[in-house]
Amino acid sequence: MMTRGGETVSDNEILHSFEEYLKNQKKVSDNTLLSYMRDVNRFQSYISLNCGRELLRVSGEDIEEYV
Image (cartoon, rainbow, N blue to C red; front, top):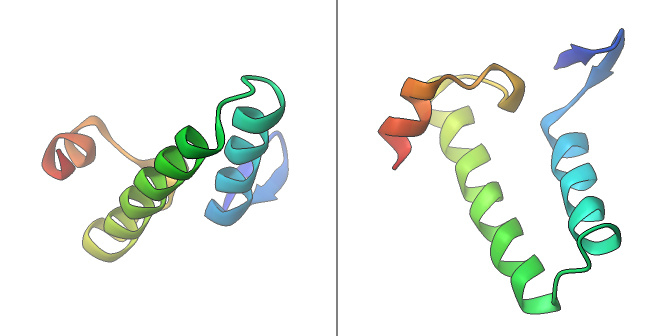
């Protein structure tokens, strides 16, 4: 787990916050929300399993390897 502003934040909390942002602030369609969340969840799983990192510690190299 990472800290942000002195608080401990898990990847799940980050993903949940992103989902809420997409729904409530950006007001994306249900299909767009499902697609975005599927993609970021796959990315999070890849980073966790292959790089041993949390989302807040992802590097540019990690992203390049994923893509």
